[in-house]
Image 1 (spheres, rainbow, N blue to C red):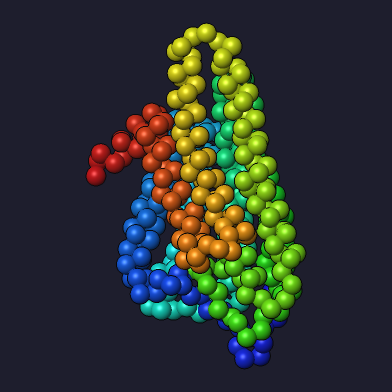
Image 2: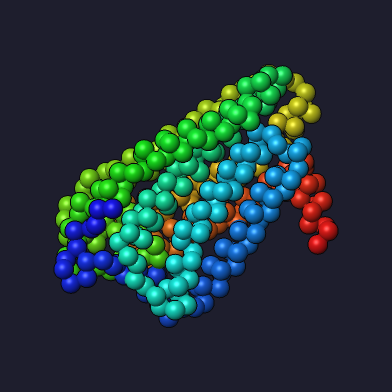
Length: 312
């Protein structure tokens, strides 16, 4: 793998500072970090276990939920273990390869997560607007194909981010004021021209919180139009119940992501620790809340979860 253009003094490592300005409270900050991380892992692994065991849940909607759970697990696991090493043991160094890996996988999973939410919106559109052909249009094979296409698209869009980092020169400053190697945070400590990095970061930002939400809004616009043509209140309520969980997950994912990304690109007047806390919450909160939302709002899944949890 291509190395960063570092100075000879320490050509193989960077230093992650954690949350600058709050170093004295790192140990306290690690407590909610750990609790949220472990809770999210347990919830998502439980979801994967239940769906894999129950044949009645082998449907497109739940397969998409499993994909979402896998991205959630990958997101938090890419960040939290290293952050806890910083908070607990003051182990702040990270290799160039490790930094490049984080700079690739974090945006990759973010784009993949957004792709899955778009596919889930399409799934709800077909289920409500064309229910008789739902099982024909969305087979398990087609859902898997959509997932694969989403992964390929994510790799193609995100791969330039770490490649652009390798072209930057890094002079005396190898200190990254963050808990992880976010591409724009790494680029900002370079002594070279980062305009291309910043521009491409905005392209990814537009893809995640611009284009994809527009496609989701289009799906829900078509759903609302179809439902309003039916006078039955029962149909209206059923459609609302079907979509509520997905809408909540969308808001939880895109809202903090939107503000976190804007803060990194345009919020020069915002305190650094606010940037970092926003970024970390964006990576930690959705993986913990997504299984809870779907477990509460989806009766079929809730019943199956109770079947296993009540034994323990």
